[in-house]
Structure formats: C-alpha cells, structure tokens
Image 1 (cartoon, rainbow, N blue to C red):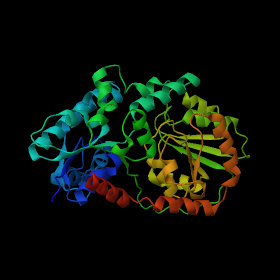
Image 2 (cartoon, one colour; image 1 turned 120 degrees about the vertical axis):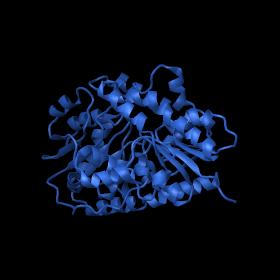
Image 3 (tube, rainbow, N blue to C red; image 1 turned 90 degrees about the vertical axis):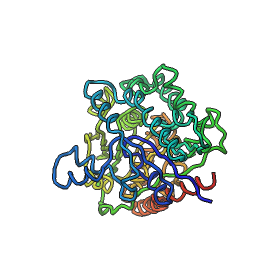
Image 4 (cartoon, rainbow, N blue to C red; image 1 turned 180 degrees about the horizontal axis):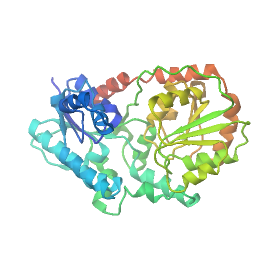
Length: 405
C-alpha cells in the first residue's frame, strides 16, 4: 500500500533541510514550502556574480531535494525584509507572517491530497483546516513548548534581573490570544509529534500532551575534518551562540568571575548579537575574549584550541552546536534542559550542570579546568559520540517514525 506524500513548511534553512531531504529520499516529499531558496536561476546567477546576499541565498539549497518540489513564498519574504528594514522586530514579523506558510501548506495539501509534516510555528492554520481527504497531521516540535520556555525565562529574570531583559526573549509571545494559541495548542491537533530531544517531550507532557503521542528523533551532524588538536596553554573554554538570556551567557560570565581557575585560563565568546549590558559585563570579566562572528575556519581552530565548549542554556529544543563541538573533538558542558542527557555521559565527553545556577557552573568549570587540559582520550570520546549521530540516521529515523505512525 502506497503512502501519500507530505507537504513540509518552514522558514529559512531549518535543520539544513534534512527533514524535506528525508522525505525526498523516501519518495515522500510532495512540496517544500519555504521563504527564500537557492533555485536553479539563483544558483546560476551566483556562479557569475559576487556578493554576500546572493552567495547566502545560493547556499540555501539541498541537492537531494528536487527543484520542482520547492515552492518559495517570495512575496512574503520580501515583505518581511521591508518590515525589518523599517525597524519592526524580527520576532514580531515572524509571528505576524508565519501563518502564510501554514495557509500555503493547507492549500497544497488540498490540491494534491497530501499529508502534512509541519514545523511548530507553521502548523496551526493547516492543522485546523478542513479537507476533502483525511491528511495525516505530523508536527515537528523543534522548540520546547512555549509555556516551559516562558516559565524558565520569567523565573530567571526574577532571580537575576541584571543586564539581560527577559522581554528580548519574550516579544515573540505577545498578549494576542490567537497568536499565543498557534504554538501553545497546536499539538492538540497533531496525529504524531516529532521531537529532537526528551526535554522537548517533557515540556509537551507538562502542557498535557500524552507522551505516547511523541517520538524522539535526534538531530545529526555532518562528518567534520577537524583541525589538528593543539596543545593548549592552560584551560580554554568556548561559547558559540546568541548572547541572550535563554542561552545562559550571563550565567557563564558570572560563573567565570566566581570560579577559581588556573592562571592563563581563557573564555572565548563567539556571538553576533548580545543582550543589552552583556558586552559591558564581558569587558569587566578577566580572561574573556569576544569575537563578533567567525568564519568556519576560525571556528574549527577555536574548537581545536579549546578544552571545553560551554552553553548553559535555560531551554533548548536540542542544541545542534553541541553535536558540532563534539564532532570537532571538543567536550561539552550544558544543562539538562537540552539534548545532552540523550547524547551520553561524562565518559563520552558530555558534562552536565544545573539550570540557571552560576555557583554550580563555577564549580563545574573549576573541576573541568584541571581534568580536561590536554586530555586526548576525552577528545577521542567526544568525536566518537558525534559519530553515533550522522544526519543519515536522523533521516532514516524520521522515515521510520512516519511509517510506524
């Protein structure tokens, strides 16, 4: 018995297009609906023109996805760019315009009598729509449930008001009830919910979702040819990510100030965007270097030079950067509100610290500052951990989940 194909919808190059690629490999992709994509015309233009914009656009491309299965909502994307240019917050624009992707998915499913596999911000309208056929509704919940995320952010803001205003994180959760409902309640209309971590499942069950409605499909990482490991002059820690409250950068800086670390210990922060006040906090913290964005070659070098990758997030649906760090042979430190408990133990180069606890984080930094320096064995274990999670396994597990639903 043949299985009806799926319409998949999301903005940007979400998960490196691995979900629609998984569908395409299994003959299950009806249509990928997205914003801007490296169409044949754009790829041809990029071969003859230079410029960051066209290069970025041409890179939004996955060879395994047939070009005729991709539908770009160019007009929506252009309107989003205009709003951003006149100062409307990106989060607000996303919330106002996410429904266009869901509406387009519903229209396509009606036309082709396809099923739906939609990422959580783009599912509501399509899931609650009526159809002449009975499409299977599969939700990809890639962020924790919004109530869980909000609770952690608000609790943290009350305990650590400091320099990182929580509203920067919460302006994507406005008071308008119909916008709140889209992501908060969409799981109630799903036949199957795919999550990339057990933490995300836990956030859904706390909201009332039956655990048996969810299946965990861990993300993957491409094979990485890492720069040769270098002998590190003391303890070197690395943070790569947005400088926001949710990512825990303020906690990391406070912990670094408190920790009794060996002389010449260094923390390198790679971040293009920082919450207000964090750049000042960085400048006041001894042994910290800020890099506002880094090219892949620079990141490869930083991973090779670093004893430890640290990202103490309050709430993370998965955290692909943990797998990327492990693939470079760099041990990782993060909280239980991430994918890390799923990936391995300390023997695998995976270290845990309590959520929103700078004192405990400082203690862990002290412990690891002596344990990890020039430990080639733990770096080999980190690489082996990442090798257990290739993207090919993610794609096969995704197809298996759809087949068993």
